[in-house]
Length: 257
Image (cartoon, rainbow, N blue to C red; front, top):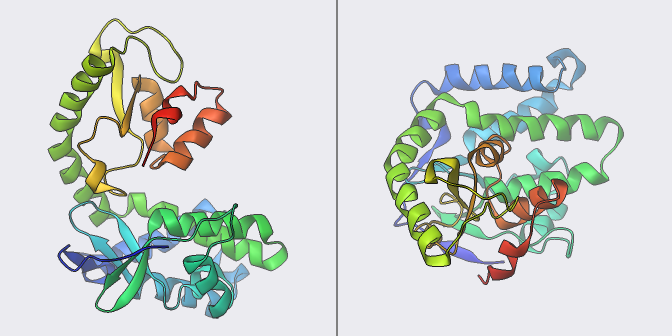
């Protein structure tokens, strides 16, 4: 587990973003719709504890749009004890769950959205009965932030600035590695318009690898679209995606970071 003091990065509190109250109320309603449940079927104190932790102790990296969740109190989200939650964050449960990298902001530790989702996925596999319903709620809530108004607008701006550089990286990687086929399907492409450069570790997750052509694969546009829809944003998720779809895994042999 690594802690990085990233005070030079500009973070903003989720609750301080424009139209937060309206957006978060909509977020809660959409979460309930996603899990096909209603407020009445949950313990109100539990739901309030989950939502208070999220809305009061979540920050945004304004450069990447990445969400970070405060470690202190994260047991409210994971639906477990403080001690178990801290162990999941700082030590993990090898080999199923790796320890989380944390960032420090205002002398408090935070974990990224992908790290939190990994802990939620781990908890899902061990939960049953009433607890699994709350874990499903949390899972849906965190994933639904891709539709949060401010974050969507922020990521649209970030994407508009990176599209051109990604296009250059696509051409550069194809030329440097002499790529003639989709690296997942091995289907030959005839035009650059048929393929995309897909980051292995997303810019928001590992910005220091953003401009490295090794941190990417050349895949068909339709595959890239599916990966975007499924939030495939790191090596582990991409590897699993390929396994599930019986795609070629030779690209993974070259990942050395």
